[in-house]
Length: 245
Image 1 (cartoon, one colour):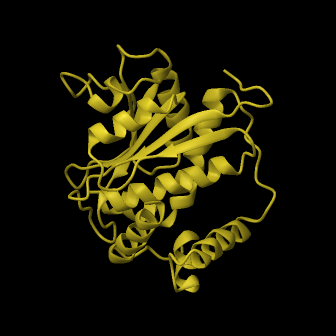
Image 2 (cartoon, rainbow, N blue to C red; image 1 turned 90 degrees about the vertical axis):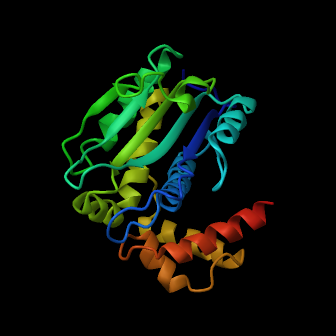
């Protein structure tokens, strides 16, 4: 499954568009949190120079739009990022695959869970067939063409998990990227530049593009020093979508 010198792995990094799912504490809503996380996963994959071409879904898309976008792009894997909801005591990471779909889905789920499970603080449920809880499986895993996995990183209804996630967003993104590398048999190469320098470069780029005006605030957000305000994330995503359009 390893790519040649001129071949990049084509990876679709999707994220929840469920803006109505609001978490406890400073979590905000699932769409904003997971769209931000997905963008950071793309960043960490980009540090593995020449190995990956990545694709993203957009805030506000329907599930079918995301599925259709993935299938038209001839991607090799599809990953959907979510957080879970339940009673306040529910906790842990879960990664789903569709057992009757492409065989690589379970392997992908295992590679992702191996990295993310130990990071999250809860009593993880592990790698699960989507038929475990859903009678007909999950459409996003059944209908996407490549091997696919859906990650429930944490429970956004659990204040302890929310606080851990907000303090460790970069770690969750990096762990997911490492899991993707492992799936493809690619050795993870730790970026040579200091992580603070990488964050500064990203913030500087957003500032140059007119997406943000307060660089100091976003330095702190991207380094996990403070949680981003949901309304600021909404403004930022709106500007990003306008720029893409």
